[in-house]
Amino acid sequence: MRTIRVNASKEYDVIVSAGLLDSAGERIRAAADGDLAVIVTDNIIAGLYLSRLAVSLEDAGYRTCVFEIENGEASKNTQNYIRLLNFLAESGVTRSDIVVALGGGVVGDLAGFAAATYMRGVPYVQIPTTLLAAVDSSVGGKTAVDLPAGKNLAGAFYQPEIVICDHVLLGTLPERVFADGMAEVIKYGMIADPELFRMTDLEEIITRCITIKRDVVCEDEFETGVRKLLNFGHTVGHAVEKLSNYAISHGEAVAIGMVVETRAAVSDGWCGNECFDELIETLKRHNLPFESPYGTEALFAAMDSDKKRRGDTITLIFPQEVGKCLLCDVKVNELKRLIARGAG
Ligand code: GLY
Image (cartoon, rainbow, N blue to C red; front, side, top):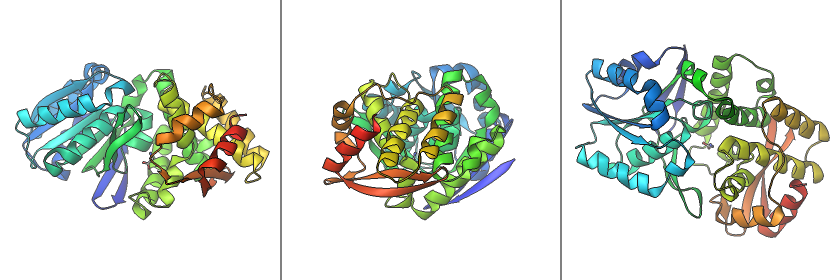
């Protein structure tokens, strides 16, 4: 078992191992006491893992109840957020109870945001069931729902009590959903660790990614500086997701975003062609897309509401080589030129 200690505004462990689900209750009990555990999950994950988690929580002395959403990004909306807040209130949840997110990024972000805001904050736990959630969204305390104007526009930084990553749960993922998470793994490879391009052991891959994320989050929890590196590929990626009405998944959009941003970096002399070629080759190996279906005008317009924009400046992340990226503040009119070069 690997334990990664996160020392942010709250200290907590991320534990990674095969077979953790059935002992989740006792591990949660050790990290966060409480009486009632509200499990937030989706209709697909409920059929696979809900009963085992509920038994484990009940064995550890929790009463349980379940809030279920439809699988998919469309569920990460304000209606479900309000429904969940009302569910917590109607279930009599207090600050000494817990919310347990069992699912991928959508479940984790929604449950985390409800936990952050219900009664000004109740404890919550993340049990990721997708690779994307395991390596990225379950760790570091970003919680949110989407607004019609853009992704993750309503949210909070709010750290969980514990993250329990049983990577056996990832074994049931459809190929496309697994590849989605690999896009974030490739992102970590690009910003910090070229070895990730070649590793094959899943527990080791997850542990490496979380360790990179932990180090970044501990230095800059609230994303005023170095945490922005984790957004490599996301500025363009979020625009692609939005333009596709979320038919292009987050990981696929980030893959396209990394290509556009890297091509722009090459064309402006920030990095060499070999970095671009290695990125493309790695994305291809994982069946991830690498060409934007949208042109410069559409991408630029969809970036309008990007929350990483400050006034007329936006921070882009440019690779210098595989394993090393730089933050680069660009003016909005400059951004359009870069996107035009990057979109190819
Ligand atoms: N997903 C990027 C971050 O957590 O900062």
